[in-house]
Amino acid sequence: MAKYFAIIIDEKRFAAIKGTSLEEKIEPIFGGALKRLVIEVPDELGQKTIEQFSKARFDARGFIEETPAAFKRLVFKKIVELKSLSPEVLEKALEELPSIKEEIEKEDRELPVPDVDISDILELQRNPVQKPTQ
Amino acid sequence: MQDIRIKDLPPPHGGKLVERVVRDPQMAWKLMEKCSAVYDIKPTLHYKTGAPIRNVYREIMSVCYGFFSPVEGSMTKAELESVLDRRRLLSGWVFPYPILFDISEEDFKKLGVGPGDWLLLRLKGEPFAILEIEEVYEIDPFDVATRTFGTPEKNPEVVKVPFDDKHTGYVIYKSFNKIILAGKYTIINEPKIRPPFDRFWYPPKKAREEFKRRGWTTVIAHQTRNVPHTGHEALMKMAAYIGDIKPCDGIVVNAIIGAKRIGDFPDEAIVEAHEMLHLAGYIKPERHMVTFTLWDMRYGNPIESLLHAVIRQNMGISWHMFGRDHAALGEYYDIYATQILWSKGIPSFGFDAPPYAVPGGFYIRPQNIAEFWYCPKCKEFAYSENCNHKGIYSRYSGSFIRGLLNEGLTPPPEIYRPEVYKVVVKWWKEFGYPFNNEKYLREREERLEVDLPHMDMPEHLKKKIS
Image (cartoon, rainbow over all chains, first blue to last red; front, top):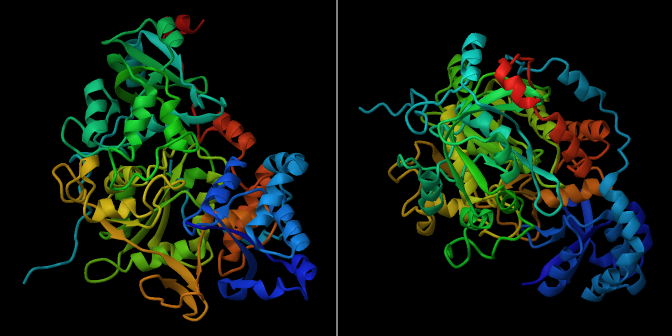
């Protein structure tokens, strides 16, 4: 059974593939709220990929998920270089895995906190409906 | 004409709620005087990595506060075999998992206890509970792990591949010490639940009192180990349309709180994100309650669903939502294994019929739900058995959403309510990381979910410590 590896296409990534044949392959998801490119890979390559990362797994949709963000960046780099969504992209990225080892290790320890104003939810939490009763 | 309205909460599993919590200090003192040894509870460490993966204190809490009724303590050898062979206690009531107090050979020798002795268990340096030792025996942790979850050969209906070390629950049992002290637990020093969990602490007796106070007789449970995405929210709302002459009075979220796998969300974010659904007005708080149970999740899909039924029926809940991949991890089980169990049974696990239709089974009824997805054409979080817009709808995936966060992307409102995402960010700021990582799990294991009030001990036990 085939497995899938998806790369979310944000503005920066879109700029890198705009005007190429890859642009046509972008799929909208969640009503266009997100966009992605999908690589279809044989089961064996999917298995090999998840074995490289402790948290990685196939989800219920058959997608390879919870790989490090650094690996996704590397896969996207390979997509741009090869101008392709073939399994070869993933194979090449796996070959270069040692080059991002430190980035991956760092990712397990820290991820930058998004700059988001959360004052509205803190206000809501100030008077919770459920209160401690012990 | 027959009145079809449901007027009472279902009875506890086993007929009577277990409550083994002593609140009278004098009684606690008397019980401690009968103890001959003291043992400081230690976390179960991963047999390879040494990371904390379970703490038996959570099981003691769940037993003594009645979540696991009719179980009253650590299982005897005969009870363990009965549970592993046919998922039944010796009394005949359905129960899925071994509940065991395991101890290392070295600690056992140091304690010098045996059947008939009482053991004082300390937590965070304070007296916590008593174990009345009835039996001491040995297990083969690998055998217990394998038989707990099943194998493709013995359970071909639902087990697809053999369990391995990537499965958190399997590793928990595999990491058990070999020596088991069996016997009843009694909490003698009631712990204080720490914030933010304290406002979600509803042990079965208290949950039933709260349901009665709210006038609820029809309640549906939502199992969670996750921050709710809009698909979860749709599931809760739609599943709750079941009831008697009107939809359910109450939707109860019961989060499983304990050591979990690396990469899951911190429990603090899970309970508060669910609470945010009513604080931000997506479900009225009059109809929605967030609660939790202490348990180091085993990710046992159909097996775990049986424990969920035990817990939630004991809380007074009449229906239970079961979705695809219920309490699952990886591809070990069929993604609909829980629904197979709750629609026709799994004979190899001891169920020739669904668990509500077997002797010793449940009053709680399943609400087997296929899947919700986001469909821009339906313009709703659509039920998969309704929406036929293939190629247009998008399926949810918790792993996918965690991947978005990992990449620093904000999940759109089609996936997370903005307020729910902000709860994730709140705890991300607090812990410096959005998910469970080794640092979080280590610190969490020291902190636990409770604090123990100071309690003095009889002199003969103090001497045992020194």
